[in-house]
Structure formats: structure tokens, C-alpha cells
Amino acid sequence: LYVIDTNCTLHTLSVDTPSLKFRLLVSSNLVGKALSWIPYIPQELHDYCADFLVAHGHSEYACQIDTMTPSKRFQLCIQYLMVDEGFNALSQIDSDKPLHNLTREELAKLYVRLASIGEQQIDYLLKVENLLPDQQKYMEDMIETLEKCYKRATELEPSLFIQLIVFYTKHGETDKL
Image (cartoon, rainbow, N blue to C red; front, side):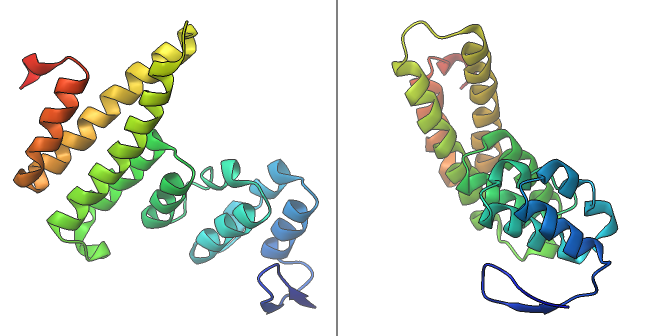
């Protein structure tokens, strides 16, 4: 069977492959069933599966593929503003630095970039009057994650300490300095 995907790439597939079943189910908007086929698809194709989900408008499900590479997970988290998931993916990249060919400075900048996305979300929430309890909890958790981002960035690149100072000052936590 020859199949052309939405990226106009021609694929030769057996009709009975998990990869084909996954794509057909995603194309039919049966994403839950499609995700159940992930364990049967070779792991080296899991990043592609995430891209396929995103291309078909299911970005929220793409990060549910636990076996995609940390760099792909981080990319999706940055793209779709998922700071907590992004921090977890970046921490995994951080622990496997030699595999990702990142310098300490590059990694520190990624932590700051992730934190800046979280700061934007917090700024938005601060403008909302009468936050719901869930929103308040989300904001508190986000501030905690951002603090971890800035602290790790400072550990990796001491010149970024100013970012941590600004963060603490902005959120009234100068006692932590």
C-alpha cells in the first residue's frame, strides 16, 4: 500500500502495520484509540507520531507520547506554552547533556526562554480579577516552576543571576536572595 501524508511524503506500508493504524485512527479523529497503538510502533518513529498528531490538530495529545525524545517534547512544549511539561523535558535534556550537544550557556538560555513563557502566562493571570481557586493554584505552581528554571539557569550560567533577581523582585520574594 502506498500512502501520501499531509506533508506530501510517499510511504510504503503494509495494511497491517501499527503505524498505519495509528495514522488512520488520527485521521478519523479517534485519537484515544490511536494513542493505544503507540507501544506497537517502533520508538524511533514516536517523534513522527507526535508531528502527525500536531499536523492533524491534536497538539494536546502529542505530549502524551511519553517515549518521544526529550528535545521533541521540549520543542512541542515551547510551541504550545506548556511550561511544566517543558521543564520536565528540559531537565531530562539537562541530565543527558552530552547526548544533545548543548553547552551550559545554551542550556541556561533554554531555561530562561521557558521561564519567560511562564512569566507571560502569569502576567495574563495577574490581570484577571477574581481568580478561581484552580487558576490561583496554577499560578502558584507556575511561579515555583519558574523559580526552578531561573535557579538552574543561574547554576549553568552565573551571568544570568540578574534574571533570578528580577524574578524575585517582581514576585515580592526578595528575601530568597
